[in-house]
Amino acid sequence: MIDISVRELTKSFEVGSILLDKLTFEINEGERVGIMGRNGCGKTTLFRILCGEIEADTGEIVVANGKKLGLISQIPKYPPGYTVEQVLRTAFSELQSISKKLKQLEEKMTAHPPKELLNEYDRLSNAFLVGGGYDMDVETDKVCNGLGIDAMQREQLFDSLSGGEKTRVNLARLLLEKTDILLLDEPTNHLDLKSVEWLENYILHFKGTVLTISHDRYFLDRVVQRIIEISEGHAEYYSGNYSFYLEEKQARFNLQMKQYETEQAKLKQLGYTLERMKGWGINNRVLYRRAMSIQHRMERIEKTKRPTREKTMRARFGQREFFGDEILSVKGMSMEFGEKHLFSDVELTVAGGERIALLGDNGIGKTTFLRGLLGELPAAGKIRFGPSVKYGYLPQIMHFEHPERTLYDTMLYEKNCTPQVARDRLGAFMFQGEDVFKTVSTLSGGEQSRLRLCMLMDEKINLLILDEPTNHLDVASREWIECAIDEYEGALLFVSHDRYFVEKFATRIWEMKDGGIVDYPYGYAKYRAVQEREAMAKPAAPVREKKEKPRSGSKEAEKLVRRLEREIEKQEQLLAELSQQLEAAATDYQQLLTLTQERQEQEEILNDLMEQWEAAVETNE
Image 1 (cartoon, rainbow, N blue to C red):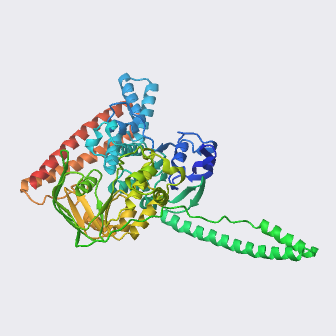
Image 2 (image 1 turned 90 degrees about the vertical axis):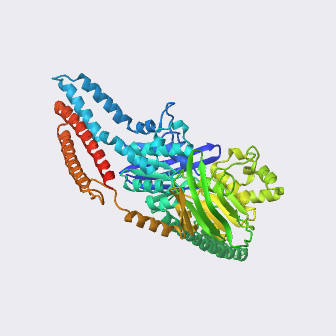
Image 3 (image 1 turned 180 degrees about the vertical axis):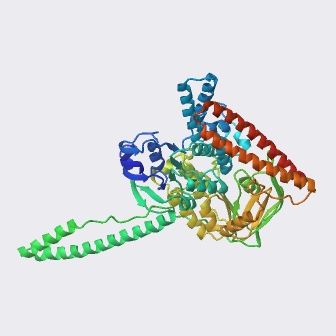
């Protein structure tokens, strides 16, 4: 069954500039498809057209009947004063409406209610049960835990959140809505590694259809089954994940180049013969007719367009030779952010040529740590750079002293270079033509990153510090910066959630957790393997299905724990039986009401037993 059908879709925003040019594709039910292409090629515009936010100029879009689309890039406006929890609960608006109607019907119930009233109550009760009305709290907790939305943040006002936090909450809301077709626009941009891995597993087990725009190559490799690449308004189709796409794209390029070269050789040979025949045929009608036949043959040959690679940036990091044993030494470093204690007693050293990835959950203090190292924020302890060290720093949030200046003027004034050098350097970073006269304040996040890199590249450095360097960059730009770092021989310290980037460059991992930094003297693949082994080796937390005996304590305490575990098991069995009776009594209002009340009472008893069990276990330890 086809979930989405797009036929001859055309969209342009300026006269003579076509963004999407007769775009055509189909998405089958349950497929996971990656939408790729350079920044500005029309990927987000396509999503906005699919969900009806804007209209196409021409073409047809058909979405399967009854299928609900959800777009993550949209952040709806909520009433002032809405908390994150209230925003999340809007995902259950239909279920909440049903619950309200059920309560209204209950108030109208008498000892002998009319049949119409009972039928309506039965219909709504079934809809509430089938829609997951009794699981709203569990589902909300599961999604929030997976995406790192903690209890404190759920109490915050939604309007007080940052743009990235709002995007993450909106992603949680969309997942809770049980949408049939997910449209995810850069869903991993504001997630830490744990949240990205959780989202990947969620999508892999999602029964609906998923279209995702992403520059996260690791994410694309794990999640998507095929790729649609938008280039010059048209679609190219690849029946595999990102790794398949890379190989197939290169194979297609090689084949097209071979066809082009073969045709050009043939045309060159025929052209040479044609000129000779024309010369000989001046006084010979037969030879002249042969010449015309060759010319017609040349015109009939189908011309293969010469394949071209996308333009990429063509600059490299300036390097300065390093003399000495240590690039950086950190002893007893501690930092706080407001009232929050981030880390303490950090002891680290960095040698020349090392490549270190700083990892950790969002909000744990990675950027603060880098800024503390560089003296931008106060830090306790001893931080010492080697005497011959000169560093270059690319921050996560770009700041320019004069955002009102053009790119051209920014280079002239801040880098003190000649007009021609400014043009050449900007051109190397894909700022060409009239682009150099844009003001810095009008640039997108990706363009600001490129400009900052352009300014950084000129400096002779031997320590490169990067904070989320691939954020906002498309795949081609990410590949370019990777090539530049490949050629760079100095020391590298970087924060990144791009696992492809981390795996490629990190020879050492610093993980920020539990108020400190753990040093792993090896790359990302081994680090992940160690993390998985440690997770498997941890003793399982006490769960009701697999009860653990207390390891120590008095015999009376042990007996109490075992008795409570038996009572909990019996109570769970009772609740399971009540759930089955509730389903069977869906058409009997009186019994349904009685059973619902009894289940609530039994759930309270179970909660009380669980609290007693937890207290007994703590006493016994």
